[in-house]
Length: 253
Image (cartoon, rainbow, N blue to C red; front, side, top):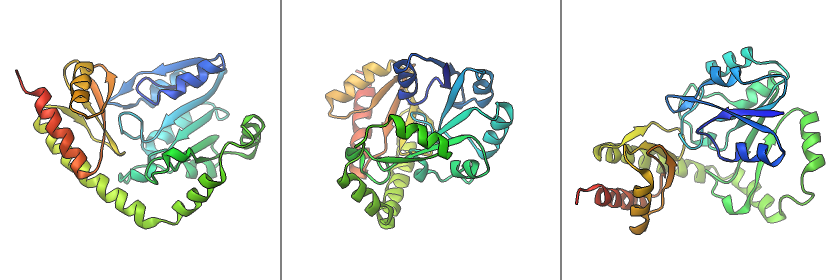
């Protein structure tokens, strides 16, 4: 059995396949986004599922509705497509597809979402998913009996009604994103436009050296290999602190 996804996507996908003794097939990306044609080529009769993070973590890019329509037409109808929409609330692109619409139309889709991101409940470890009844039934047979606590469930219900918090989070993220776009490009760093609350940058140098230098300045980013860093968009003062530290460590001498 195997699962299919892209190389620069959520690190847990290959880990879960390794845990069950399966094969993980990683397709190359195109322009820092999923190459759905490459994913489709790796699907066969032993494919359990295809993982698509939309927006993608760590690059912040999305696949569009048209992309997905063509992808579904290219794979067997019985192939389960797991659409990881952990960051979907941040998306502003009008071309972004809602995974639930594919599920309602009869596609073999599972949609995963979380309260850990825009709602700020990461410490409570609570999320939710949608799929066909038989898939949910199979999951219920193997999940832990007390996989969420009552406090987490109460907080999640309260969060669903807190539109003011979501609106503020979106505004803060938008402001920070635009500020960092300009500041990072001004430092000569290549920025991939994001639809999430983090930015993927190509530093053009050893990202591990930069990571360690920033750590000494009290700033934590994530080194991703190939000269890339993943930087979370923070509060205004945090973004400014990042730019100040980057300016310092990038300065010659």
